[in-house]
Amino acid sequence: MLVGYTPLALQDPDPFKLFNKNTEMVVLNDKPWNIEAQAHLLDDKITPNSCMFIRNNGLVPEGIDPKTWTLTIDGESVKTQKTYTLDDLKSKFQRHSYQLTLECGGNGRSEFDPPAKGNQWTIGAVHCATWTGVRLRDVLEDAGIKSNAVYIGYHAVDKHLSMDPKKEPISRGCPMSKALQDETLLAFEMNGEEIPLVHGYPLRLVAGGWPASVSGKWINRISIRDRVHDGTKMTGTAYRVPCEPVAPGEKVKDEDMCIIESMPVKSLITYPKTGAMIKKGKSLNIRGHAWAGELEVAKMEYSIDFGSTWNTCKIETPENRLAWQHFSAEISFPKVGYYEVWARATDSNGIAQPMLLPGWNPKGYLNNACHRIAIKVS
Amino acid sequence: MNEGDLFRANVKKLYRYLLLLFSAFVMAAGLLVMYMYDPGFLDFRTPETIAVAPVEEDEDRIENGIHVRTGLVDAEGLMLVVNNCTNCHSAKLVTQNRMSTERWNATIRWMQETQNLWDLGGNQELIVNYLVTNYPQQDKGRRTVLSDIDWYELED
Image 1 (cartoon, rainbow over the protein chains, first blue to last red):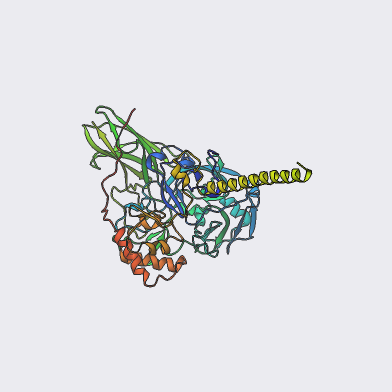
Image 2 (cartoon, each protein chain N blue to C red; image 1 turned 45 degrees about the vertical axis):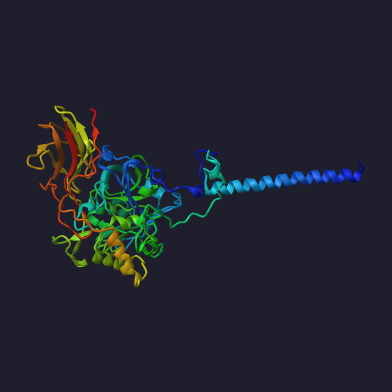
């Protein structure tokens, strides 16, 4: 009876249907929703919605009406507090599109030892989509920026898990220098369509190359601050690492933790999927993406002998600043057996990915250790 | 048959029709209620299954040693964890995290200071005990070996 029809109230919260995600995506948490990709799902040059990770701190807002949505620019360092409708933003300011790499600050957290608290992301909390919107700079300048401005902080309509209306799940931001970059957008489109609800509809701040938590979703207010923004998850240990390196497991005082800015150099082998078995004499074509926060990737290499020797990959220039770059290589294996292909990117400052875990930190951020896949030749 | 008898017979007939209509309505309502509980109940099944009246499912039922609703391991302290730790966030956030007693206590303190978690009183020790016993910390070193690989033939 009534095949294919389920009364609304009885609907099972199937996240893959709910968010239009590939069913190979991995659900880490369902309240709040946190879902990551696997390396092979990120093979597209521009990540489609179906394979984009979801990171939520609070509850996805409901009942958004784009007609009544407004964005207010306020704060200690705004010249004139101003409020814009979505139509104002779209009609008053020039549109720009950029491919922007957004990686969760905690991507790779699952590998830290001793373990770090939080969602145990493996490698899939990164994507590079095309974002379209207006420059944050244009809007901030329209309201006017006082000379004592230091930081911007965003506010959004998502609800805190405790349902306490006084609490914001997250309210982060960035220094003025990042806020005023060409590529820092107030976006209303993703990959040429309206931003999906879970990714920030109808308005998202997008700041490529920085922890993706800077790219606030469901934005309705941006404060121009005369100090470092002190919203939720800006202070304490959130999105911070020890200012000075510490031993694994060491206790670090809040005042000795520094805010993460540009993300480190990193890469992913997106083809083939790990576990490929090939015949002897056949070469293997690999490909993937590399990114380096605010910088470019200058060199891309692979190793099939655990780093004893490294070979160069072809690496493309980025579509625009802060977009990930595509690499490829053809690999010949000298004999049959078990191999691991390790990929290593080096940024334009000569800093390369480590093969081992980088410096331990209490919250398990910034793991940019080399990605590797397993291959058998027979 | 005189007019009075005819009238009585007609009224009886009408009464029967109305009764029939009413019982059909009650049955339809009953079916709809059953459908709300189990949309698949009219699909082909054995008669025994159909005969079972919808019972209130035990939301804390345990299957194969797992608390079905949350996925938590059934062990001493389970319901304390369910009742204190899965109101605001998913149990998945709990089971993903493998921490020591000291770090769980610190995390609980953080949740009390910033996330509106209540005082757990004497239950805190039992909760943390449950967590460190059933979700013990695993040593991973600086890099683990690749495991759980699904091997497949790569066709080119």
